[in-house]
Image (cartoon, rainbow, N blue to C red; front, side):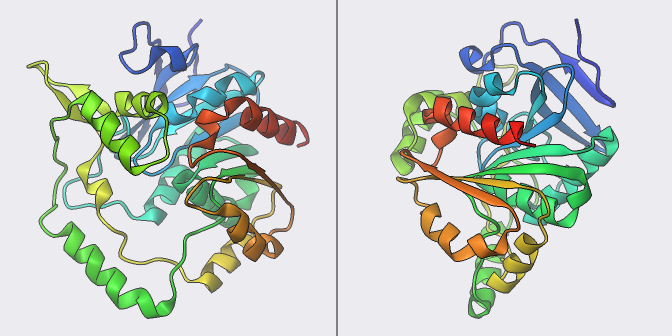
Length: 304
């Protein structure tokens, strides 16, 4: 039986080329928001909406391992703009953090979702945190995996941040499709991260397309790798987190470069209602320690 959602095209993925063992019963979906097309993976036809937001340079495939823990919910793992199968931003545009928050609000209001449960990893956790603060009436609960509020920089770094951003964006006026070798890409990613090969492969498979000549290319927008022009200050981050009204679950990984236990200690007083749990593992803790992470999230959600 097909799934029906407001303004969403849902199609069955019978022979998915991207990690079918991880996709399971999830179905491909397209969201038309104005002129921008977003994609994602959906499971469940009824129940509250759980919206998953992936990390920087990842995609919906990174959240698929958690799917089995959301029985009774509509679980939607979204490809954020320029990532995975989602459309690239227009020529001349770039990827500013608050534009992701705008995208999220457009999607939630278009679909008329209420009491959404947001589950975000890394960048997705930051975007979800900002959204939960700015639109608290739409968010019932927030799960932030290996992130604890916005990234910040001191005011003294402003000039260098702007300069670095402009130089990184110079000449990058449009999206470019770059040829790629899957195995080489997996090796390269594992070399610079703490990911397992199987997890890197699942994400990269969804980031690769095949052209008419049978050549593989990056579907993810090359402009994603440019730098942000500005970062929030610590006072701005504090104001954002202090306005989050819903219960929050922060999940850390003890071997991650994020060192979330230290960040949480500095910021825990900002939250109205927060729980913190740390597990052994790296930055993609939800992929490598899925059983513990999924069970912890489900217990948290069941308290709502």
